[in-house]
Image (cartoon, rainbow over all chains, first blue to last red; front, side, top):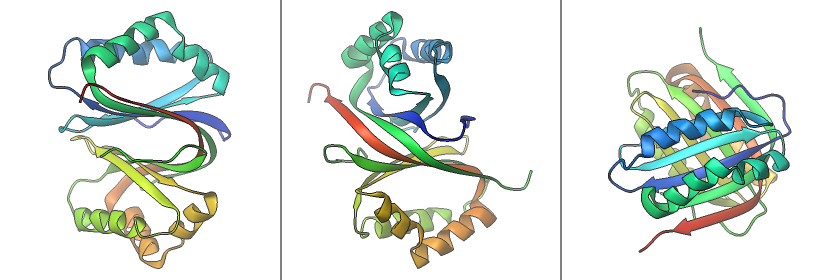
Length: 109
Length: 109
């Protein structure tokens, strides 16, 4: 649920999207992409949530911009990106950011 | 829903959290914080989603690190942060990141 990232600096891909109605293979592909991303060099973790209104935010964390570029160009991921544009998403925004500072708090427990 | 941010560079605060059960004034304070943040110098927008399991991601966008520091030190926001630690959140992570590139796609429409 929470990504266990190292000390900054590292990189984040902030993917905000609104889904269309209907699954159309989305859930299966989404799970596969998380599995595949986790196998890529430089992958540090991912946090993801989607509301009942179809709006969602996924943030994946990477060791470098080069690791992000390699993931973007992954052949199986390219096919998923195409499906995303054609079928799954009504609108999306992708922001590539360099994480400079991080704080966490686990309360109680 | 989507934040209409300018061309990079700008800054993002990625706030990942898991809520405790029960409202305890959370919804009202959350709405007030969005309203208050939007009045701060350097605020560019916010995107937020929480799933039915209590895990949520809020990303706010700012023109500079100084704008983020000023928002963090806002007196009314400080009181909300304290309530967050005491009552609302089981765990949270805050990451401050510099957005270097951004892409968007509005499909159809």
